[in-house]
Figure 1: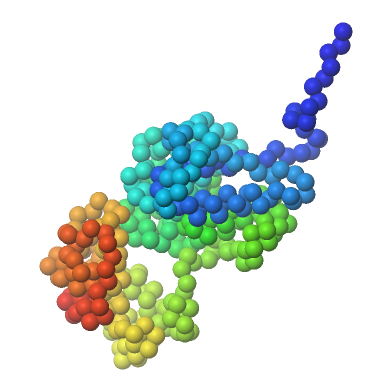
Figure 2: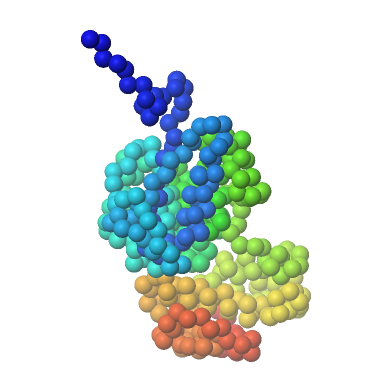
Length: 349
């Protein structure tokens, strides 16, 4: 007797139909909920386009248990760490206290899947995890601007960009937040074409997706509400010379202005002096390094261009209201008068 063929819908595959691409999300504790949601929703919104299923997704945690995001909401997952298919795309989702969650179990899982050829990316602070796993050495990458200073100090071998996302070979990194939508739309357009990417963008009411060339933060001109390329150039020069600070006069010369002209520019648009603003940049970097690395205070002091720990502590206390050794992470910016005093408390190297 001839046995009937099983031609059920679940097993039938029309000729020429492409298998849906599967994205696997690994949620680390305290992950950024908006980064994860923006990436996932971009995949979900593809439903309804040309009648095909373009994407599938799978959500993992280290132990298969629900994971609490940084906003306190719990996220149910599909299971624990598992072997992935080589055609999968793994996205590691980070958030707060990322160093605590980059466990050997997580790092070994990422390294194993990378060796097997899986495309691997990160959103938000999870760039740190990929770096620890050794995936980003010598590559271009990005991370949320809040972690940029620490990453640059700890991983000098990474070409760290101030971009919304970066793609280098099999690995990609994303600043997180709404930039996760930009990343996913870019990957979708590259892999499946512009029509699908445009369809998803319109469904998400996201009419102006950004490319990997876009910076993360608003330009200084936009934040100040004015257009001044000289001001922007001056601040860029300051940021590029944190460890060995320039004098205000040297900054002015570099942008083609006199010291008096530069002073007027800063007072007009930022309400402060070049010296005070420069000091603030150095102190903010110092605070980032304190809370995001295990560097000693003496190392942080010199990495941020201070000649001595005494001067560093005095300036730090004037701005943040507490000495660096007693700072518990609660940001309390001092008054403008105190910030000016902090600037006067140090000598520019």
